[in-house]
Length: 113
Image (cartoon, rainbow, N blue to C red; front, top):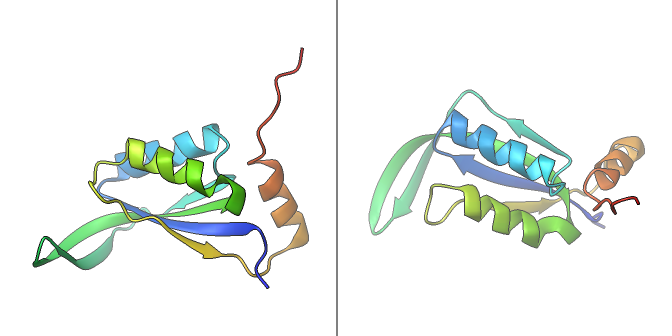
C-alpha cells in the first residue's frame, strides 16, 4: 500500500535550468529534496511525429501527494519545454525518520506573529 509520499521525475535541457527548478521548488516547500543528476541522460522520444534525441539532466524530486498539483504548476511555470516531463511515482516504503523529515519540509509554515 503506497504512502502519501511521491518521487517525481522531471528532465531539464540544461544544468542551470535543473538547478533553477530544484531550488525554487525546495524554497517554496513544494519538495523536501531534489537530486540533480549532473551527468546527462540521453532521451529518445517522439515529438511532433518525429523521433528525437536529447541530452538532459534528470531531477528526482521528493514530495507528498498533497503537494503534487502545486509542484507541477511550479515546474511548468519555470520549465523551458512546452510539455515538460512530470511523472509521479508512489513511494511504497521508506525509513520512518526520512519520511517524517520529508513531510515536515513540505508542510506550509504559518507565519508567526
